[in-house]
Image (cartoon, rainbow, N blue to C red; front, side, top):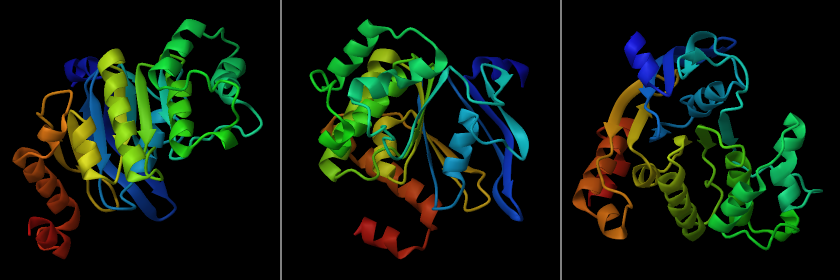
Length: 261
């Protein structure tokens, strides 16, 4: 285990989390290699967000441990960035001041060149003085990604960040994440309810069981990048989507029958 742990960027070891008598996670174990994107999917209430927040150090496990580069995560870590379901921009601060807020809290000097590059990359250059109310939902989420990446974390945790966006904007955001990853190769852990989104973004898709969450299956995603419309419309993607949905819904669920027709 020692060698595998040292090679992993993140190691989840028999993670368990209990809320009173309710077990959200139990015996959950897997490794995440550096410079990869791993999506975690599963039925509602299976502990996906609990697991992600435990990786961030914001939640303490009831049992087991999570390691970053071989060291236990016991509190929020400067090398781990987090993008929430909502953008969580402060409404009284403009876009650039929201991005600079973590630097103020930590007493760090921001790397303006890197921040400007990120703003350019996500097409927010020129909106620095706009307030959140003046930005669309997609623009706000792009700003939250810039804020998380501005500190150059080696791990980025994303908790279903595009679930509230319309289908077109969500697809745009997925392509943006892929493009940023191709540039930075930041290790990304992505929580989503969309199997299609997981397959578009990920090197692996980990399926959790119903509560208490544990690993039910771990699928490599072998499709080349960048992932074109042709790739995503192919039979191999369809077949893998079906297998993952069968894991989540059960082999005899009516939703699988409908999907196959």
